[in-house]
View 1 (cartoon, rainbow, N blue to C red):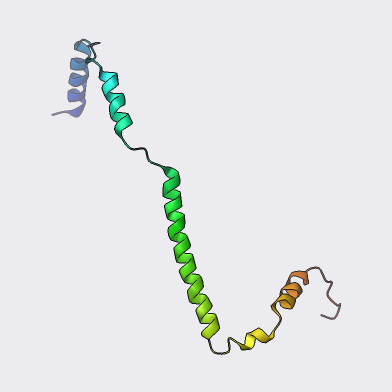
View 2: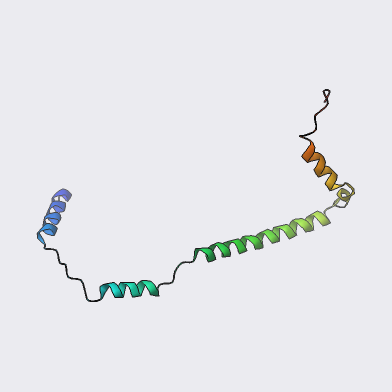
Length: 102
């Protein structure tokens, strides 16, 4: 069967049928009652749940890396350097002009 012919016949049959303006009794009230009965999706709880799961993973990674840095061989030798002084030198390295020979 030709699809365009079938489509034309279906459209003609739909146009020949008269429109029914009758709505079932209390239709809108039933629909609204069903909508009120459905639980709403709370986006904030989804975000909070995802962030708590991410926080738990981050804490686990932090604990593993902390333990690794404490128990790694030569880990205590790095404590002899002053971290605050290294940080200040790194931050201010762009501010201080370099010597012409460097």
